[in-house]
Length: 479
Image: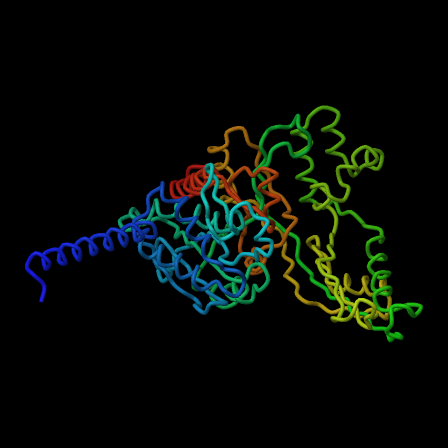
């Protein structure tokens, strides 16, 4: 039996231990508790959201985290599907059952893998905040934008409880954008479009850039994407029986045959397309440039001027993506074998990005004619083509919101050279606009799908302000 003094000591130590545990718990809880969000919580919220490794097929935990944040902060949450590989939810000012005309803020939960994690300055899923920058996979593409949209939406959550705004505003977070849209936007557009009742969708797309043409055009330019390229992923397979030994190659073994086919595609003459949307963009860029150089840019489709501007459209230049179909060889492979063993099979994966209006079937037929009958071509995946979205009052409201935040900026409709979820909704006749409402440096743009992806904290707040301004203009009708 303990003495009374010993008993008091034990009780005191137990009390101290419980206190330490309670303080530790409270500290941990406060770091992850986002019950009632304030503006200053945005960076920490994004850092936490980044920490969920929501690589394709594993979106569940991140989606559940974000949807709970939404419900805890007064939004009306509807989960469309909740398995880890297809977690999709909507969070709205008003319940979807209200059937108000709905403005959708679209974002995706999934991120690409960080296979090069050893090369990152900070771990890719750490959400480290260093020197006022938020590091991690998805900080730009596109968890950062989801937090911008959410924080702007929450500014109206309380007033929506007492005011009858004309429009509903909804955060729509989906899975599978990077490789599996049938688990996300494609499914939502096909099965739940009536529930959402959208009048406009705002997804990812153009951002703000500076020095787009030359250093002397320092004015920031924002491109709101109203159309985008479609994706076509093809696999090329060749088979050729050989003696097997590297010392006795056949005349045209599999690797050699595949390389010849790829070289034919690389050397094939490319035809440019200067459609109505591209020419509208180019005219505005010419006006921005001004002078003789601007005049030439505005009339690039004149044969006499092409020698002076064609370097601006060379491969690797930003304007190249706007007027040409492009492709990348993303994978070349053989079955596993010894170093001195000639593989009988060789494969390559091609990532094509096609301009709007391209007939996919005719395009594939053309590729078959180029590579020849001994190369098997199969379609891995393709995304829908869609007509460009016309500019409307929602475009005008977004343009006004951007100009209010960035007073010296030029805003223009653009063809987005990449491929997103947007066309699944455009194909339903819905007006869709793509925007990342922040000015991104070349370094930040190059970090997307690359190592050391990061977003400045100030950019996060700038994006929130643009979306907030947009909502205010739509609700007030003043734009």
